[in-house]
Length: 106
Image 1 (cartoon, rainbow, N blue to C red):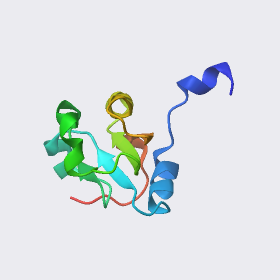
Image 2 (tube, rainbow, N blue to C red):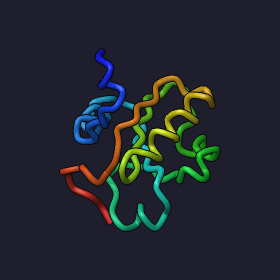
Image 3 (cartoon, helix red, strand yellow):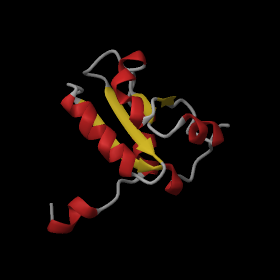
Image 4 (cartoon, rainbow, N blue to C red):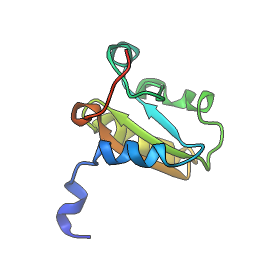
């Protein structure tokens, strides 16, 4: 891992593929409810960053793989850090939906 690897943005398209191939995984959208209604990745659950403490409503098992995304990657990075501090063991920040090339639901 080089010095610039920590600055590289996660690849949301690869992250969604990883989510889809992980039975029992949770895809978590941490944007606002309005942003979520405007278009989200199919299968995702919306728990806004401002209410991340309520994540147990969609992610009860702290050992389940959790894939987190937002609009650009900043909120998902924050959410991933908070989730790890909350005891979630398999948290993956997959970045922002702004660079997602797949289908979205409205």
